[in-house]
Picture (cartoon, rainbow, N blue to C red):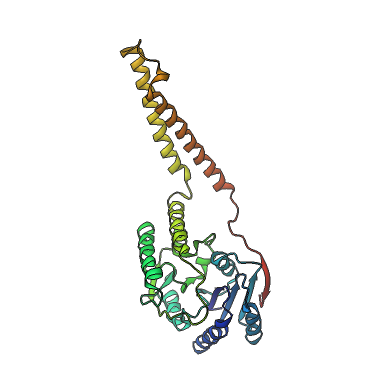
Length: 315
């Protein structure tokens, strides 16, 4: 199979038929063998009914329905597991991503040997204050911490080699950082392409201002995972060693002062340096303990993804 298209959605019943028609037209005109996997992330409208209907009309349309709303990352994760295409696409269901971009992105993967190509919505039709400006700040911070030169990390339209999506695990809200997850697994040929961005035609966005707060918190997480995810003791051990060293030096100073400089002066326990020494040694020991626990968790950790499927069609 040439292409798998994975489309997470939540309450997008109005747009699904139109999106299906556009995808079918593009795939047919380019003679692609394909599948489209709709992931219904706990919709409360008629989205699943629409998916059922179009899946009966077109056997290339497949659907997965979650028991409840688990989030975009979990939807993408299960879609990646099910995908059979040599090139895997992700896109949003709100008609803001244009299926006409698929052939060019496909060629960048197959002909130019990119591992991953991310869309770049250079001209956006979103709110300048609440989306465009925060998005620019967020993307700048993501470039700075990851070293990946992308202008739009969170663009829903992306293309991947199949081996990329089979070797990354998208969990929590890490869908924003799929390029970083791919890079961490050794897939370094990451490119971008300017893509068309259309105004939302139906419904309203499912993401509020809080997504930027969550995004920056996730950015800190992904930075930590990238740097120390496989060796937490390297971070916590350094901090612990530094704190223990400070405490030990204070202890030596207090002991030397008491024995050789001022043996008849105040008791060691009455001096502020004693409590600094004691506190830093305790804190240093705690950091070492955190590092050891992190190493143990890393070795025995199971899958971080969690979801329950209610129904599937054509899978």
